[in-house]
Length: 320
Image (cartoon, rainbow, N blue to C red; front, top):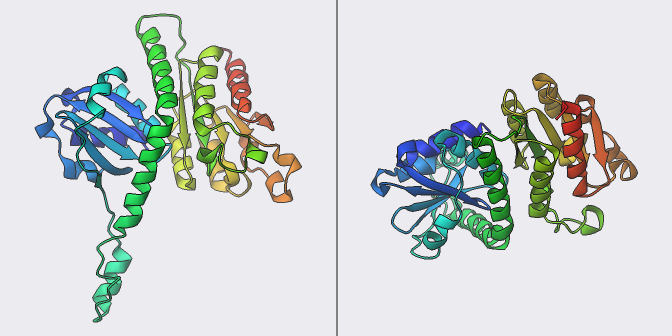
């Protein structure tokens, strides 16, 4: 995922940088206030990569729905492109009411269409344009996650804004930024096998990373999570020239993905491998780590606090 390209597509769809007056994030949603709402091209917005849907808020507000783990990176790129910092307070009065129906982007299925063309029989299932119910259910689930995690995400956004303000004011904040990459099922922390992975939520892990990055001396921290191997590879490649180091927990891909290892070797950035559980004491297949060959340190068995240790160890390695 190229966060800058996605942010540029969203910006173009909402009328360009000059039409954006404020922005913020709430879990899976990118919030945008526009100067002139008539300039928003909803068809173009729906077609932007990674966008699951959108909902209008009030007269000038729009919320763009992304999958878990993607919105943070896109929002950071949007801030860089517009120069406008996140502002949660300005959205309090906007998001409280006047919401339009949720518009969901349905992706066409070319395999189904080809099968239709070859068949003369009109099957009831084939007549359905797309599995709308399943997508609506997905977005409904994301909305439920919004409400549950709003307060914790707001704290993180506020902390990032404070970091950026310090940098703009000419303080001694260094330029080094760190990228935290998490693989499959890490977004289910607190729910997934708590006897193994603990009771800390994914949002608690995000908060730990952002707090530790500031304490360790980094100018900023971006957290990215995906359940898809290609997304993790894209995130590693996109880090080249932008981040000073990577802290990575590839999840189950630790034990299977040579492609992620190759991407890490290609960019050559300092990297630390983190695992919440002690994988060396678990099943035999989990004791194999491909990514370890590209890392200067492995931290495991410390739960969410392993990310904090990784942040300070990365800072020490970089001489911050």
